[in-house]
Image 1 (cartoon, rainbow, N blue to C red):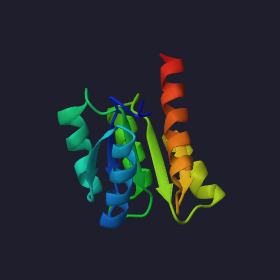
Image 2: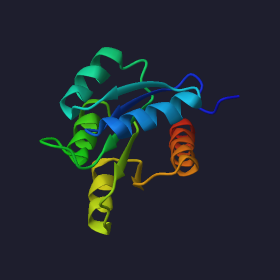
Image 3: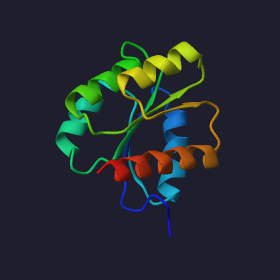
Image 4: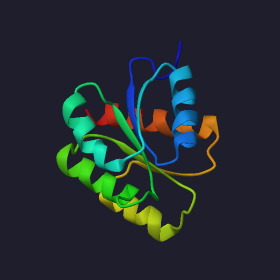
Length: 131
C-alpha cells in the first residue's frame, strides 16, 4: 500500500525542477500534490481547499515571501496545519526560527526520498497523536 494514500500536500517552491521532483516522489507514494511556485498563493489555495489539504511543504529561500513567512501565515490562519520547511542553507538560527514560527520539521536539501518520506510520516503521526 502506498504510504501517502488519501493525503493531499501543498508544495511551495520557486524552483520548478524541485516542484516536479517532489510531485513525482509524493505522487508515487499515493499523495495528491498541489504545486505552486509563488508563496503568495499558499493562503488562497489553503482557504479554497482547506478540507482537502493535509500538509504544507515550503522552500525557505524564495523571492519576496520566505518560507518562514509562509510558516507564520499558515499557522496564523490554519493553526493545526502542519508545515515542513526545505532549505539548502540551514543553520541552527534558521532552524530555530522555523520551529519558533510553527514548522514541524526542517529538512536540508538535497533531499533523499527516504528522508523526506520519514519526515512526512513522522509529522502525520504526531498530528494523529495530538488529535
